[in-house]
Image 1 (cartoon, rainbow, N blue to C red):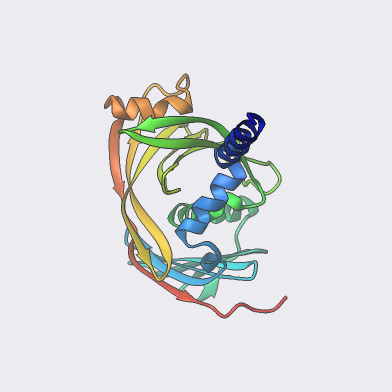
Image 2 (image 1 turned 30 degrees about the vertical axis):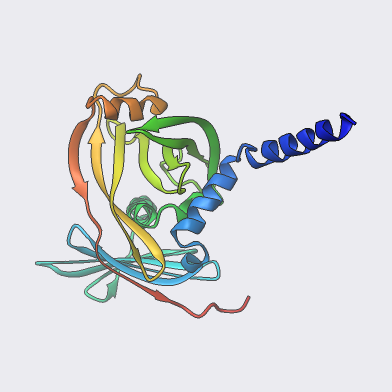
Length: 252
């Protein structure tokens, strides 16, 4: 007669164990992207301004076009980055550029779109994701996701290392950091602020911080250092005039 209660206990215990099964880095990122708009990213036209420069992106069934338009005393400079090419136009005239210049401008355009449309880019083919731990920042629980990039497809800055603090409660990227090696190198830590949903997609602004010296700093300690006010505030990073329009998906 005592067997049935024991079996019932084992069933309940097994069910609870299943519910608390640890998520993988990929599952965490997938949930975060879904929470921020999911498939709406795949077929959308997005426009925004960043530091008085206009940007636009169009994604449609795997094809993309990212643009940057700069207007100054010399007229209009327009950069166009697609899956297959980069082109620069000065007042409507296409310019001939050296390969090194193409790489520089391509990375610059892609970087702005990458940060503005996070977390969508975390599933790019060149991204390597790893769940390296969990932490608490200002009383909130986070997954710590480390991101590195494959040399093939990872761009000229593929050696950079990123860290994302994704809230366990609602799967939002509340903090991120990256260690970079171009120029003198450094570490940047960003706190997401002003979250808003525009036509189904989530956008944020950032408070931008640094730490010096940086070479010996472990990325996972940055949350603690931020709480301890040991990071130096650098700037506000604001995305303005955002518009999102769905695009009818094209057929394969």
